[in-house]
Length: 347
Ligand code: AQP
Image 1: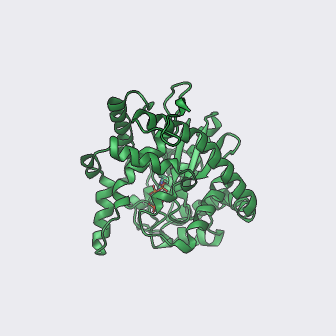
Image 2: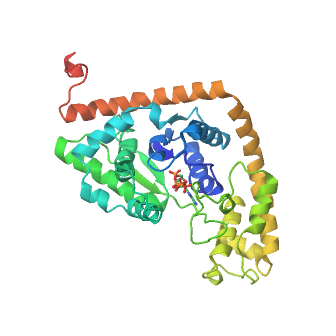
Image 3: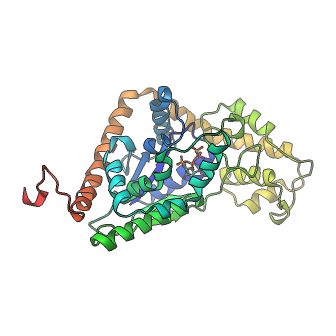
């Protein structure tokens, strides 16, 4: 079983596609039961626009479906449609997660520093974010077979995932075996960087749209963004080792290799001795050719609003069956009875 979440914090970009969606679809093809959720309760831990929030979430669902997520083999749902996530987060926050652990989270420190630059202070939700993440993961358990749930994540999330495992172990230690410890699967997919700053990752919430290639960008905009991407004056080198600290070159070659299903070595060999013009031209061609059919499906799915609502409803219902079962066991373990004070077993 696989559980994965993606935040509705803006337009999906090719970094999300290569780093999260494409590997997820590949895992799904191995017959894994998949739960994919739109992490809207995570997205509200930072600034968000209530007027467009719901549409951003739905567009994200439409794009994931357009990338070939198979709803026969998995559920896709909104986190906020499955209230067990927040209830479980409260229980874990009280019983198994400790302030000292949250204080060590690098992502919180980085986000807090970024907010401080604008004289803003973080929300409590941003601080407790990893506890909600623990709830997201631990609700989905293969209790019948006892096999660990796989959680595919980028390496920037490995600290949070280790915390999820620690929280589960600490709960089990205190209340008896309740959770099967999950298995983080750290992505081997490439990290895609900003088109202008090769040291900063491509990101949905980056205020400058020119830094990323959105999955929904039209062909002419993709061509323009690659044309304007940062380069240097040198020719393209002959080996990966020679790339050295030319981070923008490395990024463009990495994107090319990922879209062409090549290794980085093969991509370097393909462009060795050529100028950036050749690389940027071929890069735009291959990205446009991959995205165009996805975009056509996306526009079609996005229009079918009722079908999407029904599909999300089915997804939430499927997720709720498993989530409420786990939550029931957790409530029982901590001595909180279900159904008006009576344990379900006594009803
Ligand atoms: N640049 C990237 N390269 C490769 N993979 C990436 N992911 C994100 N950016 C890149 C992967 O996409 C998934 C989405 O996770 P998320 O929506 O929870 O948030 P994120 O990682 O913080 O993604 P963004 O795009 O950078 O959003 P914002 O701007 O909101 O922070 C994850 O699996 C991630 O590894």
